[in-house]
Length: 579
Image (tube, rainbow, N blue to C red; front, side, top):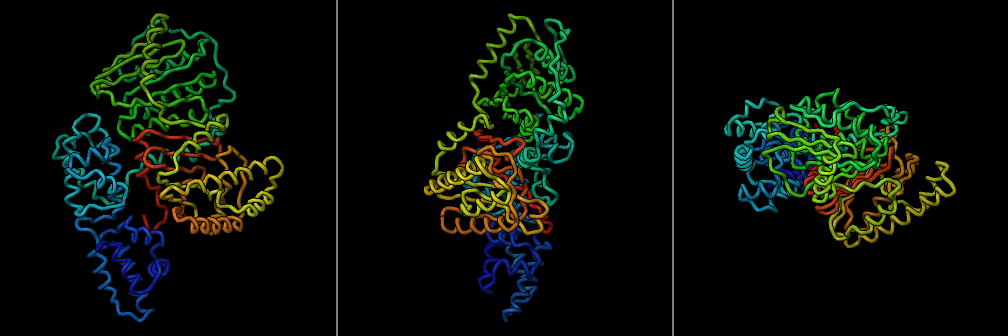
C-alpha cells in the first residue's frame, strides 16, 4: 500500500475529510491532497509525517477511536517507498531537470533501461512511480554516466550538480554524483521553464522601452568604418564580430529581412554583462530601424542553455518583429556553427565543438559574398520549422482562426492567472463592468467575448479531460494582489479589477460550472506563481502561453522538446510547510 493509500485509509476509517486533517495536523490541505493523490510523498521520518500522525491520533480521540500516535507514525513511515529518503516530488523534479539538462528524452531512457516507454512517460508525468526507487535510480545513473561523455554534456552536468568538470572525469565519478544529486533533499535546481515564465510574467514592454530609451533612439547614419571583409578568432573576437555585424546592418540603408542562426555555446557570452548590454542595445536598434528578424534557434543544445537563449529574446518577441524557427533534425556536434545575414553584411564561422576559443569567424560586406550567404541562409530557413507562432493585437483575426482550428478531442491542462471568463454569469459580468465604469463599445466588446468564450467551452464536450487550475485566494491574499478580468484573447489591456465580493461569486460560479461538466476538473491554486499570464497544454503537441498585458500577446509553441517540458513542469509551491 502506498503512502497516499495509507493516508486515505485512515481518513475513510475515521470518516474525516482532508480539510479536517489539515486543521488537526497543521499540514496544508493542498499538501494532503497531493499526498492522497500520489503526486507527492514526504521523506521517511520527516516533520510532515510526524505532524500527520499527530493529527490522525487527534481526530481518532475526537471520534472515540483507538489509534495510538506512535503506531500511526510507524504505519506512515512504513508506507514510504523503499529506498526513498527524500520527498518524492523533489526526487521527481531532480530527475526531470537532469534529463532536460542532458537532453535525454523519455523514449531514449526507456529504450536504454528496457522499460516500456509508456511507463517512463507516466513516471515523468507523476502518474506512476517506480516499484523500487533504489534500483531505478541506479539504472538511470548508470545509463547517464555512460552516455554523458562529451565535453558540453559534462560541462552542463557539472553546472547542474555544482561541481567542477574535473570531478566528473570518469563514468564512475559521474555515477556517484548523479545518485547523490537525485536523492538529495536540498533546494531543487530552478526549472528553466519556471524562470522563462517568471521573466515573461514580470516583463513590461513599456518599462523596457523606457529603460533602454528605445522610444528616443535615433538610428545612426554615420558610416561605420569596417573593411569589406574581416576575420575574427577566439571567443572574445567572436563577440566583437557579432557587434560589428549589428553595426553594419543598422548603419546600412537596406531594409531586407535578417536571417540569424547560431548553435555556438552561449553561456560565456551570457556571463559577460558588457557584451550582453551592447548586444541587446544593438538588437533593439535593428528593431527600431524596422527590420524583421527570422531567428533559427538551436533547440538541440542542453535544455537550460536553450531556455537561456530564448529568455534573452523575450523583449524582442514582444515587439512582434521576430519570427522564431528551429531545425527539425539535430546537427552533428563535431562542429559548432554561426550564420547571420542582413541586407548589408554576412557573418559566418565555425569551431570544433567544445573548443569555441579556437573558432574563426568571417564578416563580409562584399556584394558577391552577400548573394552567396543570402542563398545559403534562405536554404537553411527553408529547412526550418516555426518554433512558435506569435500573436499580437495586429494578428487578432489570425489568433481566432488558429484557436478554432485546434482539435477538441485531446486532453487539456489550463493553468490560469485569473478566473475563466466563460464561467462568469452575464449579470455578474455586468456588475463588474459597472463597478469599473466600463461602458459603451468596450463593455459590448467584453460581453461579446464572454458569450463567445462560453460557446467555445461548450464545444469542448468531446474533450476527455480538462484540468483547470485557478487561483483560490483568501481576502488577505486578494487584498495584497487583486485579480483582473482575463481579457488577453481580445487584447484588452485596460485593467478591469475584481472586488473580492465579485471574485468570490465568480469563483462559486466556476465551481458550479465544473460540477455540471464531468470532463472539467477544477484544481484550486492557493498560491499562484503567475499573475499576468496563463498557459494551456493541448495533448502532447501544443502549448499556448498567453500574457495579459504589457503587451497582451500569445505564443503557440509547437516544438516537442518545449511541449514536453511544459507537460512535466510544476509551478513552484510557495507554502512554507511544503518547502
